Length: 259
Length: 246
Image (cartoon, rainbow over all chains, first blue to last red; front, side, top):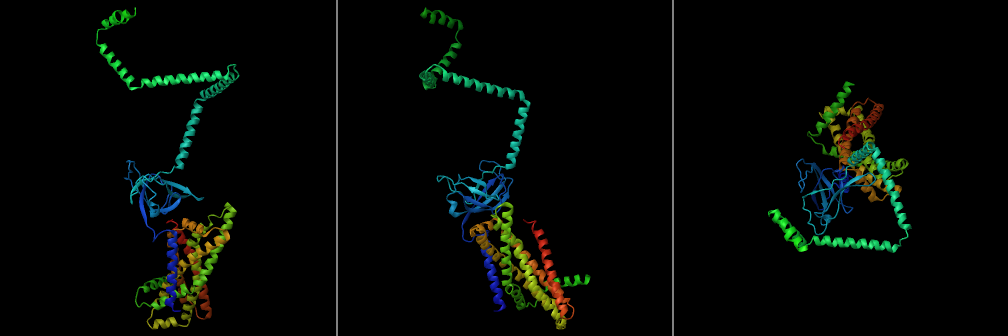
């Protein structure tokens, strides 16, 4: 075999292997059609270029680019400084809508980070190719620990500063529980029959029903108008001579009619 | 010592510059690429594949011993193969096989005064002997090393399936998780560097060979030892430099 042939075969063989390998790594995809959207975050929790994007748990794309933009704002005007460009395969594009949510999740034993997309409702609009959408920032573990630590410190300080009060509250609660227990046992052991208690509860329910009906009536349109008219009347009477009113109410009016 | 360094630098400078100056001896280039790449193919593939098999088995044993699970072995074994094992073993094998051959060839020419004859014919011996070897070694090592790396991974995938019981898609997904195209690029740069060093050192010792069969043997031995040491040292330097890019 000639040297040219040998070298040509080696070159061809290696090229095929390398292309297949790079294709397998998913760094480029000759046959797939995908669309891109931009996701906005303030904290991305360690996501990287190449991290997978999953919709309903199935891989449908990858993070293509990560960039910072100090002037970026989301649809509500909130400042969002981190923009993740992600590609989404066409087969999943239709299921992802404007009300879909974009979470950053953790998977596997080594904690692989990925973007999980929840499916949107079928009535919502489709995403726009190249559109900007707000992602949901993952919780910051360091912040949670810091807040828990701070909260625990405050509770400890509160207890230490009000030690006497806290003890007193606990003692009072203890006494209250004992008293409630005694009251319940008295009710249980009382000679009154259970029917009496049932009647009592029935009456209470009836009273509360009546009160509700009255208060409901007071909220009616007529009642409101009546109150309004009374109010206006009072104001009109205010300007009249107080003595004359007094005389009317006490001597000529109500009193005369009553007595 | 200074004369040796001077001679080495001369071989590097003239050898590299002569590649870009006519006359271009394409047949010589192709012959050297074939000698390095095609004719070393089988021995390199076999050795690298067995190294991958041993890596998988040993890593599985150690991981099970320490963390009671070998689930991560396919991933980091792939990374180890691409970043280190494939390139270094390929380069060492080429250094032994090809480097020894070239050192012996140049040393024989030196002691039989063929190099002096080339000079008489106004042919630069470095351009005539070293330049094709540099081209052949850089390209041959690159092609062979890349093929060896990927075949090595395929072997590792089969061993993972047969010995550890993980299905092939698991191996592929773990490899995708750990290995990036960047690793393949760095492996290529390493291979090209190793490929460059082999003919330089081999020819350097060949040109310095003393008369007699003993001189040829001594030049060959020194060349192989120096090439091996240079590859190991350069591997450390390059790994250290590339670690800043990860």
